Image (cartoon, rainbow, N blue to C red; front, top):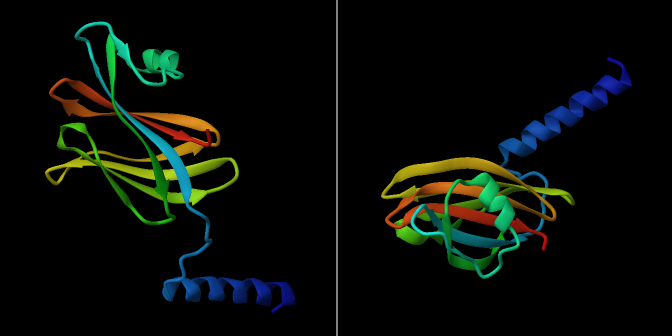
Length: 151
């Protein structure tokens, strides 16, 4: 074998061996997000948000006539650890930070209620940036989740 191939093969063996031992891979720090929960409906025409910075984007993305903010909170996500967040209507949002870089975070988002999954997706959130996630129905309309990063 040529020396270059020996080093490549040795590197591959080390990576596979470390994976078998449960080495978590690259380590990155916790990330902070702002999570806002809205209920959207076609009943009325009010736009009731504490911060309506994304009003135009929400109106373009979702075809509702009324939006009401239900909750807003800062959320810290540790790498690889799912965070459980109760949502309006008895739903639960699970967020898990998959990867982080200077420009973008990847977050696994899962919405469940009574052991049924309603949304299961991976979000790429730019820094700074925002992601809008249309969720399941509640008694007053439909849930919309706004995940803000780096503001």
